[in-house]
Amino acid sequence: MGMGVGIAVDLELLNKYVAVAEEAAISAGKLIQTSFYQDKAVEHKGKVDLVTETDKACEKMIFDHLSKNFPSHKLLGEETSSVNGKIDVLTDDPTWIVDPLDGTTNFVHSFPFVCVSIGLAIGKVPVVGVVYNPILDELYTATKGGGAFLNGQPISVSDQTALGNALAATEVGTARDVQTVDSTTNRINALLFKVRSLRMSGSCAMNLCGVACGRLDMFYEIGFGGPWDVAAGALIVQEAGGQVFDPSGKAFDMMSHRVCSSNSHLKLAVVEALKGHC
Image (cartoon, rainbow, N blue to C red):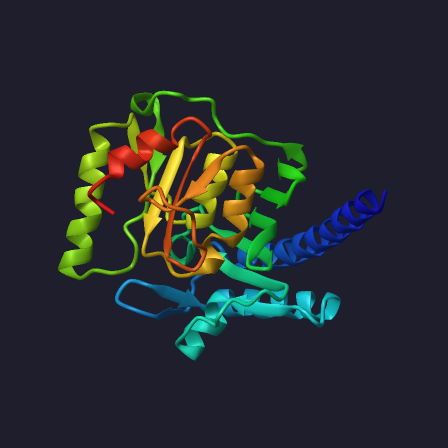
């Protein structure tokens, strides 16, 4: 009986956490939507990595909302980390991991694959995930053990069993040194012979949600910005019945800048297809 009560309390807490994260994501989404078709003031974080005033305003709005509701929780965000020049160490404490605007380059070009990504990790394990694309008005949510949803409706990964019929996704990343570009394109070349087609939407979080709702059969990315790109999306994939792992086939590490995800059938085939390129 005690265990049942404990689980009920946990679920109640997770539902409270996800509700507050949804509020934060929708509020930030309104900011993104308002400025989506306007001229943007753009700064360069790197050669091709961009940041706008909207990124910063969204992060502040989300952090303020989370801090007000959960003052003891830690906060880890993309823009704060880029200003500080480092990623804070992830501890076991409840930590909100936030990408206020995933797909900034898309945002700058008014390409509609942009989203707010908010994940909560406890004991370094994601337990809440919220991803909101305000342009498409798609709200993805998940709680650990509670399933995954798109606009309140349950979602699940595809049932595709043949890699040759799979729609895959990846990203080119932000680095443009010769070695990284060669590795990236060699990986794509190897995969193109083994899948139906390949997409690059420009948003790691949206790609993970694409796997979760069955639009994509697999996705991988090596060298993305940080845990804020994957904290929410990885949980959403898992709760939708999919798998999240390192592209080498090893266990997924949220802090490693490496992610691969697929439906429940394709993991071995995906790892084999990427073998020698990761």
